[in-house]
Length: 538
Image (cartoon, rainbow, N blue to C red; front, side, top):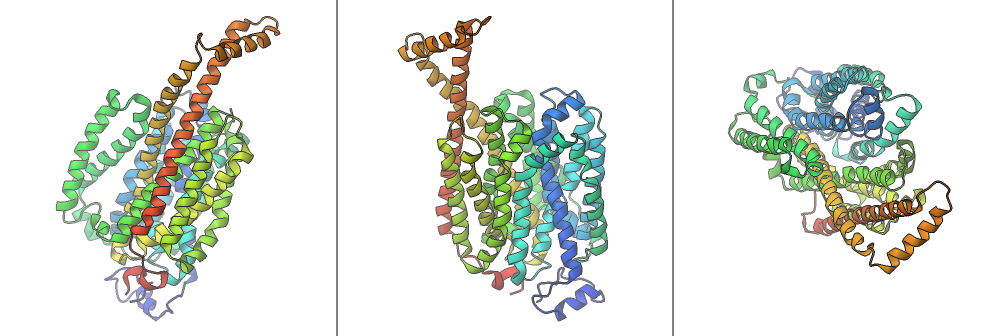
């Protein structure tokens, strides 16, 4: 069976289906390559938009006269909507075809981007961002499914690093790109910049994608209760994970209500998954051991990917006092490391055992986070250079084999649903990771502050000596209450050290997680090699 043939049961008279068996095993039609590149660029825009506004929320807040409680919803609305669409896209792709779904997603994402730029208040912005996230989420799994169906296994050393690079590079450079755009122009251009590329992607997708055919009969079997349950489960889970750490979890009424809705939604969703004729999400892909392990590793990669994309800017902003532009410049190294490692990862994936490659990636990532456990308040670009290079290179060495292991041995008819689940695990890993990181930062910060404060009291000779020296220094400044200034400065130093220690705790936690996974890889079965198992054709 030729790997290029996509759907079982395609009309025999169609030229694509008829021609595919006659093609050489490693043939890559130019039309499909261009279509795939357009899809990859669309996915890049959708993933980039998760993080592109994160460095510019203060500018958007000022422009829309929003409160500090309202502005995080610019991010949260996008994430909640996207996490619902990603698993749903598998069913929609089978029903409508990849061509219709991807073109609609690209066009809708572009229109919502333009609308977001015209928002005059925070309510409009939240609605437009939710639309943008929901529709744009349909582009992401389609690319993963296409990569493992339209290309033969012999070409995956090129294709897999490409989608791995986009999936990891886009969220990593998001704050950098957003910082540059909002400084050079205005926050409106964070959204307007999507319009022209979005139109081009939608046009190319409609003109060139011909991988499969729609099955409109599935519409009559659409599981509306399953959709409602999934939306309640994933949407409320995302909200609980986003808002819980900052509001003492279930002590906040909104978080408590969402936790109840999430539970009810989960019950409905799993009931429908196992009883509906055509479930909204097909969980049978998890019966494939490689896919199950690949999804688990993808979940952990999501923790590392989104966790460090969050941690580094928070450290530089809170401890070093950097603005968004300076943070973006300092963190650009990780993106460059990913970019240059991608082709190397592609070559290695054909040369060495994928398990060894994953182990190197996990242990390299753990080394980078362990390096960060020694940070001080003076750490700057050069001190962060090696950890960032390790982070970027290791992330690519992880992602390429994980993609191949998870999706490379599934039969074509399961790939669309499976790619949605696979991408969902990475996003959920990011959400769980951020919630865990925020919780640890808050709790450990309070713990370390209490412990440090015990040593900075009136009975401490070291603290009194330090306070006297600082009072004398401030006393040389005219018009300043030297004692009050010294106490304030000392308190600030304690707060800073407590924050530093909490960051170090988080980095140590990530080190243990990734180091343990590096050794856990040894216990999984050796995956099928590139040339031997892909596409279900053997």
